[in-house]
Length: 115
Image: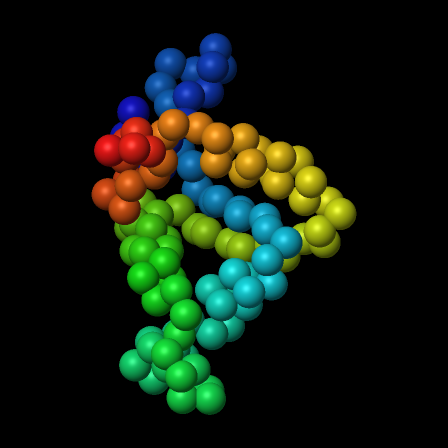
């Protein structure tokens, strides 16, 4: 199945097109970074207002690459900040993912954690 598509089950013969992705998180650092700060960081050569290097630059750049990939498929990406108490299921799933032997690669695939 190509990017930007998901199986519709028995509803139709072809996959449906994803048009919008919402990432919900209780991390204000992530939401504010990607929605408010990232363009300024890029314009300022990846330095903060206090003239220090932006932390996790590699991860911010990777996230921007992923968002650009979705944008190229005409898929909108939004980041929503949710209160911590409403994020317990996501925390549980993230912890479960950390126990998995597979990890996401920067190329968009998966590999075994040890390789």
